[in-house]
Length: 147
Picture (cartoon, rainbow, N blue to C red):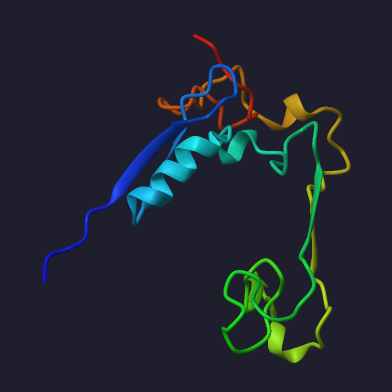
């Protein structure tokens, strides 16, 4: 049997100077057309609102309440509202089936700097020696570098 055609789309990060891109693949022409029509701005992970940096040391995410799947209501079982049957991280795990309907998950991530550090620039070996070629972002300090 022949493989179905894929409809792919490449979008570039809307943050000034960023060269990151995302590639999306759609199963149908209808899905592809809907995505193009929606024309949502794309931001890469580094420029997303939850990216931790020297100026943003804490981020938080709260799931929607557990219950039936929102996307597939006929799917059996209990799901965290965002479509996850389980949520996990290093040495932590939560299964939606272990909790009653309406349960939510809250994940907090915080950067804790060493107590003797006076400034962020002390912790890195900048000026900008560790730069990715395709993003122009310093991997030591996280700043956008424009050459």
